Amino acid sequence: MKLKPKQREAADEAWQAASRLLDVGAQGASLVLIAEVQRATHSARVAGLHRLAGAGGRTAQQLSGLHAARPEFRLAALAADLHQLLLVAHAIRTASDEVDARWVGEARRGYTEIGDLRLWGLFTEAVASASGYAGAVTYLAAEDGSVWSLGDIAPGDAGRCRWAYVTPFELAEVSLTHRALGRAGLRLEHATAAANGRLGSGRRVIAELNDGGAWSEAPLANLWAAPLRAQLDRAWSVRDEEARRAGDDLVFLRATVAGATRDALLLWLPELVLRAVAPSAHTELAYRHNLQLLSRAVGLDLLVVGRAAYARPRTVQLLAVGGDGFTLPPDWQGRVNLGLDRLQAAHLPAGRPSALPAERTDAAPDPLLPLARRLEHVLLGGRTTASSAATSGFLRDEAKLADSQLPTAAALLRRLREAPSAEAWLAARVYLAAAQASLQREAWLG
Image (cartoon, rainbow, N blue to C red; front, side):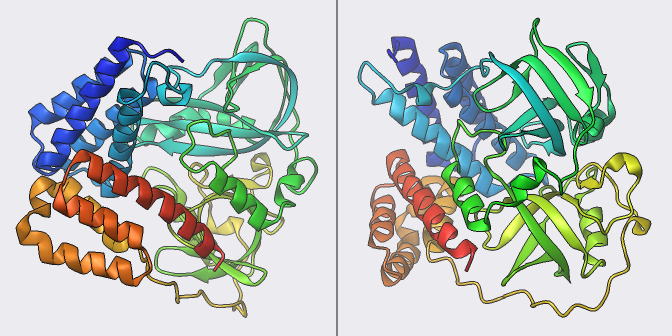
């Protein structure tokens, strides 16, 4: 698409603000500098650079979280958001007259009419983001296996998730709750949806709520029929993709409870033990409570919905479970939304001693860790962390990378040491993201 002068100016403003952030470091960033990032974000939004504005807003939010010492702050998330800010700004400011539309993004995903849909409720996820939005998203499946979503996300904290889950909302002439929708059937005429599978409303939409289906019955059961390796290939193919469709990053597993470690439920699959962890640490959500109860039901067979934790081999973030071994209230329809429904001991059978394989603990160390840590150090401390006083540490890390047969990583770290700049940091971060994705995919199944 044609690049406008105002868009190039906004991208340059964002690049300069991010560059100054790397100069002084996130820990030393003043309120003035954070405001500069926010102004650049506003300029990007006014210029119609929606992807850049999103990255800038997340970066400013993370910086505020760091300086307010909020428990949900994660340095890795700040590094990822700044990476996106620099990457998009660089792509736009260095483009000629034309720029790929993916760098511009969409202000609001457009909804188009897609015809009639017959959907079966799958599960409902609690969403509480670091950017201050919260609510509930329900996933539904069609007969062809496609997954669609319908959500209620708005400004608020994690406490809003439960409110969105049980509060009725209107879809055409039907009043329903996400708690019911995730277990019911839905027929839509003249349905509208965005390219990412998010369902919308419209004047012509006609909705009818009807009976849902069990996970163990078609068409929902087909989601659990796909081999794990194929599901992981699908999840990795959409990693960091802006145009990810609803459900692309989900995995559907048949597993047996095998016990627990300090922070994870152990799930046994044939010839493989997975760690299942809570997607969120918010105490308002029921994830940790439910995982602790499930860990006592050793031998319980489960149908599982989760997300592969890319950076943690053989680890899934557990979203929902179901199966015949539960004694659940009838209106739960044999499934548990782990962030929103609260299990009781009476819902579970008594556990029994496990003869299942123990968790593997021989995971190999990450060979890219020296590069990742140096990039985070520079992000936190700024240019001074790459000064002559830190040379010996850089040289040790460069040697470690070279010894691990990662010469490109060593060269990029050397470039950052010799001339610390936004360009050098971004180049190393782009390499790190690609290399980590490749290594993590290889390591996930061991």
